[in-house]
Image 1 (tube, rainbow, N blue to C red):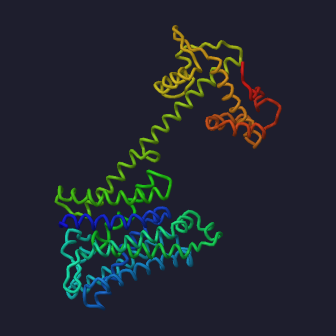
Image 2: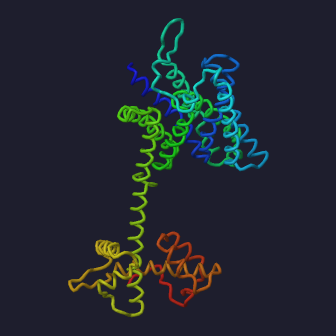
Image 3: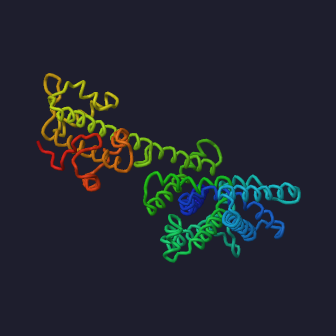
Length: 428
């Protein structure tokens, strides 16, 4: 394999390993813990070097993993035993340990051959030079072997404990009730995150590994509400960022790991715009549809209220549009939809006629509105304050809920203002 292939493979392994576990950190609202772990392992690396007097991977890994687990234990101890807020506990522990690591490195900088910039930022470009030798046999880049093992471990961890992780993340109380030890699951997850962080930051750096832990999961949550789907999307996004980041770094002549995170950020930005449910575009479309629906309801309600008073069913088009109480172009769209549904008829003389079906639909809407008013008044809201709240919720009142509310209000046929509540059968 070429050097480029090894670099991309290393990036994919690091990003996907982090994305698998980072998704659960996002779910638990513990994103800052990934930042804490990636920084707090620094003194473990320094201390491991002092004792081993070498940069061999095993002592470095043990030292970093030890401090990663220590970080988790200290955060939990401060939060649970001394009632320190969780975010404050994380901030206290990781800043203290990170500062300790910086001090150790700076004090012994003249004696210790340890590059803090490499620790903080990583250098994935040198992956192909760091080979695994065994009995004078070259087995390829060492980071690839390490991260492959970590990815397999994470896949097994999530696969075997998927139900337990899901239950403990969404509802720790329920997990305890059904016999799942939420505390044990938490510590196992934090241990796995510690190992993954330590294994990854050698390639992408202690700072940039935070983005690989958090951004894929946060981005995936914009695309789906199903955890299994979110995990799959997060892994795919991590792989895309590794591939795209490598070629972006070549184009910009910049840090490869940094470019990978830039791609992750770009994917997140695009997702904010176009994600099908949580994206800004989808929300704008949803709000637009709701506004048009409300406008249709208001037009029908306004016309039905007039016919209820014995007035003509025919309205001037301009007056009918004014009933919608929305922007004129939304009102026009609503009126066209009503015509398409056969609820109103647009005459040649620019008048709007309420059809029989439209009157029936309008009476159903009026029934729902007055049922809400009656129900809210029954709950204690003054009769002259029920119109606004009823107008806000009536558009979400389906037939089953309308029947349920109808059974809860007094069966005298009148709302709090003394107006007749249309019956369930609203034919002419």
